Amino acid sequence: MKPNVDRPSSWVKYKKGLCENCSAGCCTMPVEVEVSDLVHLDLVSEDEAQDSHKKLAKRLMKEKIIKSYRHGTGFFMLEQRPNGDCIFLGSEDRRCTVYEKRPKVCRRFPEIGPRPGHCPTSRQKRGAQK
Image 1: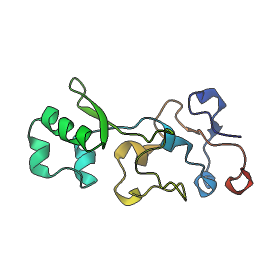
Image 2: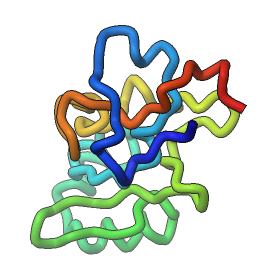
Image 3: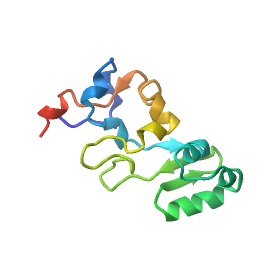
Image 4: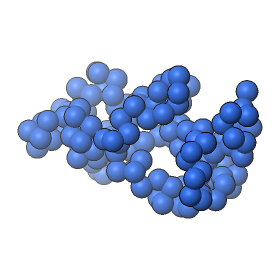
């Protein structure tokens, strides 16, 4: 059964060890990051972070790293692949390719999100999926 990230009521309660059989359901949700996350990911220099975020957003959109920028909140929306996966999700192993540098929102999930304390994983073990 494929996770339904759009239906938080279908999510399972997070418990220790759940990530060991991760289906990367959370990595298919839109990810909003701050400029500090972009610096931490080595996508933006400290100097660039001090300049115009609008100008920075234009460059990152051209490079297909972000898909939008909200001036009012200061959040950048990371780009997603056509199938909805995060651009940093490995296509073969479905593991985060920037795990040590991942954005704060990813580090805090599932503590925060649409349904805190719950995970949009399938109820089957990863190896049992077809």
